[in-house]
Image (cartoon, rainbow, N blue to C red):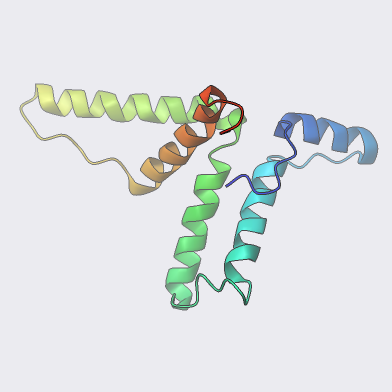
Amino acid sequence: HDLEHPGVSSQFVAAAEELFTGSYKDPLLEKHHALRAFEVMVDREVDLLRGLRTVKYYEFRGDVNRAILATDIDKHGEYLAALRAHVAKVDAARAAGGEALAMDKHLEMELILKCADISNVVKPWATA
């Protein structure tokens, strides 16, 4: 999900872009990563998505884009709040004797990729 990452944050790239061009595109890096991921997936040599019908292709593309955009650190607080809200609902359902509620599949995918993204800093340098 971090294809061609320059090693600096989106905020740094946006500030540099604004300084030189007067424009600010947020979240710049994540949008670039999503675009490049799909360029690779639809490349004739890769053709990873050839079996998907049009509706499934756009559904998959939307899911992947949302998951990649979720890795924008500026959205971290929003995702923590959504996770806390889900945990509170699950706790309330269990306390009332009900079954735990399933998490929204999109939120679940976004959180999984977000966890993978932020955990990268604890890996040894050679692995990361």
